Image 1: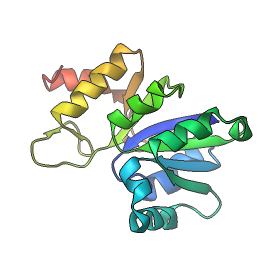
Image 2 (image 1 turned 90 degrees about the vertical axis):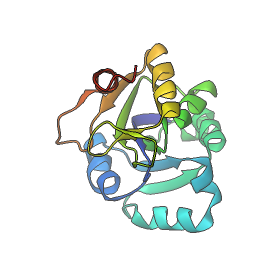
Image 3 (image 1 turned 135 degrees about the vertical axis):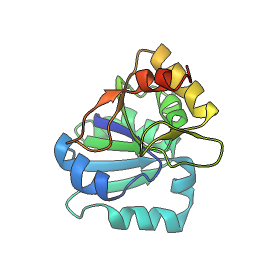
Length: 163
């Protein structure tokens, strides 16, 4: 499996992913990787309905995604992978998925979180996971859309005195 782009976006598959990122990175497949989404039949159905018809789309658990990543049957798939949180990325890496760069695109604000950009908020738990990703040498890019300016996510966390 060739992961063309790995994006953290709490909405998983939606218009920005379906209409912008898929074309921008040249992926023929979208894999939304998140345990709770994969186990919720209604949410899974809604996510798959949003995906563009020309693109193969799947909603899978982290474990299943890692198994598919290692399976030679899928070695030629060009994938846009979307996860809900930085913890999902760490779990994928811990199961042997090769990650070098992560696009932080959207994490919905909830009470107790800190707003990092107009589309990204982080909890203390998220910050710890991002610190671990940074420690492992993963390049973290804050970018909502392909045509918007990208910036270094860890620098943004530093500017908010979170690391």
